[in-house]
Length: 331
Image 1 (spheres, rainbow, N blue to C red):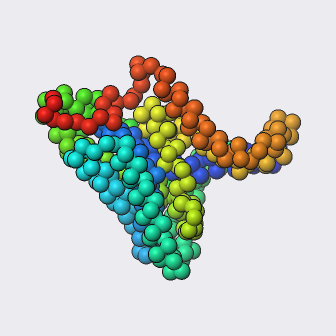
Image 2 (cartoon, rainbow, N blue to C red):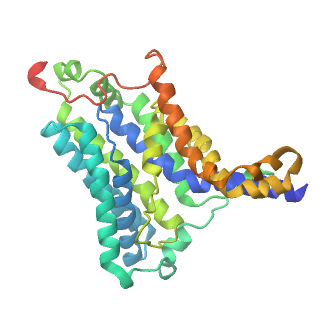
Image 3 (cartoon, helix red, strand yellow):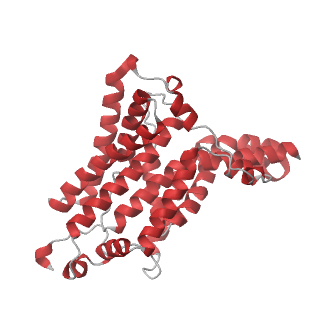
């Protein structure tokens, strides 16, 4: 019984650990989309935040510096997106895809350029310690859930705090309500004195910065090991875009969405352990081809997109002006 509980606890622990970057990416994209902008550059933005945050964190041997630089570097991607789509009225879909291409290209350019001088995470004790588990008193002692949920690293708790804070900001603050008005009807918001340009710029940059924190998390999770062929982000940015829809543009629901997607994402690693521990109920997991497990997160992403396309607009948190450039002269 103890062995079976240990397997389940480890499975749940890794669902939270491995998939927290999705939460950062999703919450950041929610903030961007609430301004009425659709940014498909999450993958590239997270990659930029990952590599620059990691390098800065190693150079300064500071977790705080890594977080700050990852936020600022990814924020610059948001600034570029804002200039092109808000000021120059470029197509948002094309611009977002360009940001992804640019971000991934910059990631590999910088990594391969450093080459053998690439810093090892083991040489930055602050990053190693910052990514170590922090046990919350009393709560971490709860059977089963305590170890899995309340013995995570600090960036997991930060991600949850950011999600709740963004939800509170969008729901209860005057600035957040104005931002939602910009995303719903920028013409009406403009007519009552809301600075559309300023609101879009600030929140696109801030949302992109939050995505960058998710990239930095991925860098630490991968122990800073740079590979010339694979990016740390590994498709998480695309899943985060779908998670926005799954969470109905609600940052708190994004926490639940991350766990749901994380379940399928982690299943590919622990299917053998689960099948061996519970042969009667879960033995069939060992017969599932490993390729299917790898494809599951993306299959679920496709299902979410299809379901959202047939779902009625009523009850949806999607901003009415999402993806539409605002021309003030047409107001």
